[in-house]
Length: 216
Image 1: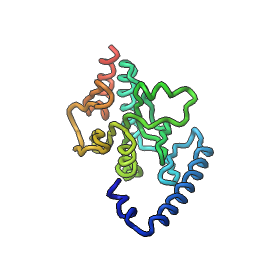
Image 2 (image 1 turned 135 degrees about the vertical axis):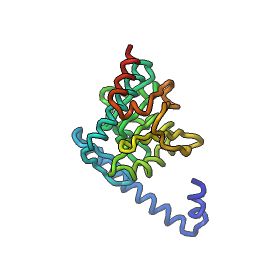
Image 3 (image 1 turned 60 degrees about the horizontal axis):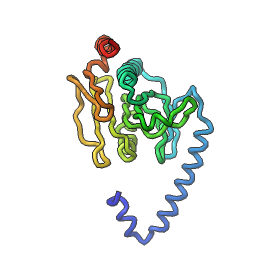
Image 4 (image 1 turned 30 degrees about the horizontal axis):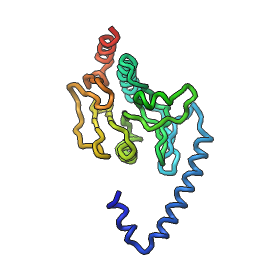
């Protein structure tokens, strides 16, 4: 942040920059309030950098991958009583933006503040986004930066076409570099004890066998 701000701090036009930023943020606050007022349960939408983005219906491959991730994570979290798992239409409120990630996990501390009437959720402890052609730039761009900047401890980017998972763990306010994982076992650093074969995310039979073993 210091490297970004330094040229502005040294500029004689700093007051003008501050005024413009203040006006921009005020406009965004008004637009955000309008976004909240117009929210409906049948539309999936996000508020990102002053714009409302609505989502088109997903391909079945995307939908199935999300479902299988939710089954795995929610079953494990419920069995171990680690917190809450939610998906898709869960509006997570960040300082500037509002997102509806594909899968989110809230640990015990944040879960205690979530009730049956909750509409706006806190920043999650763990987020999973399943890529699609229309959202990949956002998932790898503004969301990647925002999740890291505001304390999402772990971020998985899942590619349903390549059948890979990228695990990004927060360290010193940034996500470390990682390579897509296509095979073997992947484990969470935030959800204690959660480890699954990558194949279980994309293959229904493997997914079911893992669930059956846990529930046994």
